[in-house]
Length: 166
Image 1 (spheres, rainbow, N blue to C red):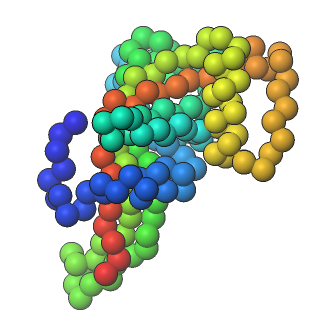
Image 2: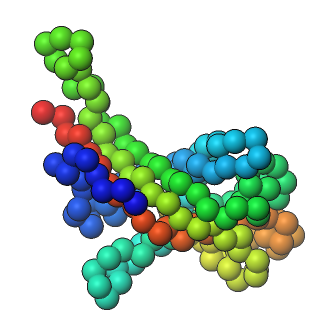
């Protein structure tokens, strides 16, 4: 991934990154097919572990319909871009171009893998529910579990960025 131009805005603190991932509810996934590029917003679950070298190993889980543009694109070319963000409010200025917006965001790339086994799909759904509704009791309908498509994005690289309100 290209290095960030404005280094002063890069989020390097792992706890801030973890809080951002946990605090967002939607990830936008960018993919491409024969019609061109497209973006799809999805709810997600995740697993974020620190490796021995201090870097973060991040996996995103989401479910999807078995048919359609997204499923076809992922099957043909299992790579994606991802983006999530948290709004921080308007930064006011003295003139039009000095107005801006406070935010935190993460952008990255990863490999998409459709989870095939029942145990993998169950784990993916558990991660989704853990993030989406941690208070919910997990009840799996075995027929729906078999019919559902669950995906994992193994994030290859990502960067966090923020603009703080002044």
